[in-house]
Image (cartoon, rainbow, N blue to C red; front, side, top):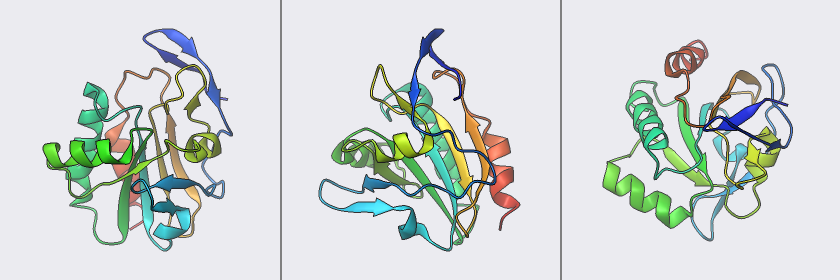
Length: 167
């Protein structure tokens, strides 16, 4: 399992570590309080999954804004998903205030299905560890970045390049 820290203090990630070449694990997350989404909802598209602990923090805010900008340039065959455990109405409020309109926000608040399936659930905090996954149109994982420190930015350029190779 990937080693992780929050402000230099070790944290424990729960779930199965995903690697390039793996079949992308399915998951069930919430679009809103009543409607769910799964991997199958994005079938046939290249998926860039940006995982953040909470949209209401500086790095998560910057990460989501950056991928929102990039999403506009990637074409219709790509979907950018941002997954956190923020409640769906909090995600909607944040997106409205931040002008986020190209990224789909999804919430793992109910069952931590995504966190467990992708090995990013933080045991001590019950938040998701910052990470990036790029999954091709056939649902094969092509790129993975598990950050070692929760407060650091991901490698935006590497993730975008991984997507561009697939479109």
